[in-house]
Image 1 (spheres, helix red, strand yellow):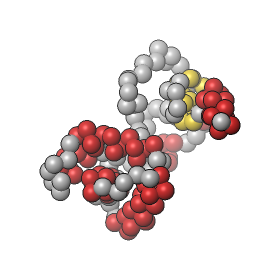
Image 2 (image 1 turned 90 degrees about the vertical axis):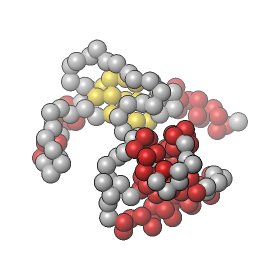
Image 3 (image 1 turned 135 degrees about the vertical axis):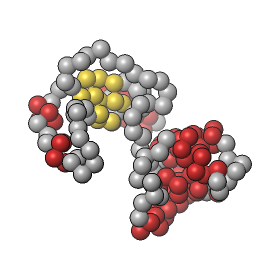
Length: 155
């Protein structure tokens, strides 16, 4: 689903600036992959982006799309939704809870919050759909990765 193009120039400028600052080459494939994602509201997966970009760049490979998307994620230009890309996680805890996920090492831990449980999500998403449950995933750095990062920055 395409969206209003009014944000596209701002997103493209930010994309180009961050890539240049990071020393990432601005290839036509990377530009088209990001542009396709920036134009949509449907949160497509890599395969959907691949099919859309192939209409403009028939030589693009699915591997290139995946690598570009993960690079864009690492640069903070896009975010992921749903399952982790490396493996599916399973959870036997069926009590109502939320998750903390370390973006560096992949650690996932349960946490509980009465405040989060009281959020009125049903009203907030009324225009989008109907909620059957609320599960929040907080992403950040675990204590061990914070320690490692601080040690790395010292050297």
